[in-house]
Amino acid sequence: MRPTPLIPDIREILESTQIFNPRTKEPRPELLRCHPRAYMGLDLGQAQDNAALVILQRLELVFPSKRDPVTYQHRHATVILARYAERIPLGLAYPAVARHVADLAAIPPMQDRGQIVVDATGVGAPVVDILRATVGLRSRIVPVVITSGDHESERDTRFYVPKLDLMAGLRVAFEGHSIALTSEVEGALDLKAELTDLRQTRSHTGSERVTGRYKDDLAMALALAWWRASREAGRLS
Image (cartoon, rainbow, N blue to C red; front, side):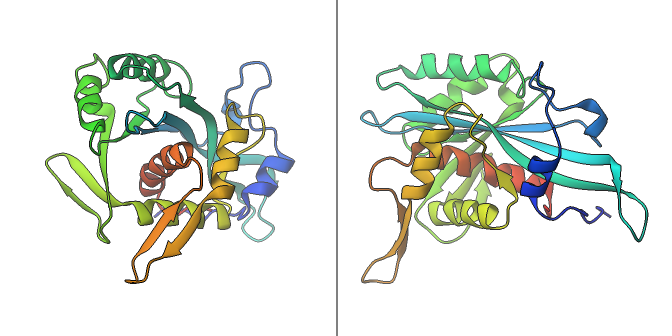
């Protein structure tokens, strides 16, 4: 049985603990209960839209200096942190996008079999094929077709996930402090601006939509990464 986290608020963890080594920018080994996991969300827009990617890292932490006053066990928690965000320039050919993704997948925090959650809707399908043909990446690709429906499904090695569910999951994650985005993350300002701009609307027929007035590519990349990370992490603190 997965132990219940004893530190419920991710803000408390970030404020009271130096999780990352300031020199290497990687998690301090003495705080890790198991090896970290990483997830890259890749949103692929139409020709006139930017592609975007966001990398999340899941950390299961233990705090040697903090003990529960009742059980006297070391306090621990599962947290998911945004480590990187990037809006890819317009006009970059899909093979070049795939090469860039492969380059990022070869370095921390993605280098140890981090998963790549790719928007396989429409123009994203050929990029999935290119990535799957890249040495070392095939088993790490998770294709997601974003739909306007209301049920998630899986068939032919692809997941079909409603956009509303992706964005709703992201909102719940931030409201529950299960995910953190700090100002030190590259691309953080653009990502925060998108998240602030998102709106959930209901049409006259009763259907709901989540849209931004300007762009939502980074937010969608974050939602894809979070969708996969939250399912593998189980219940988060």
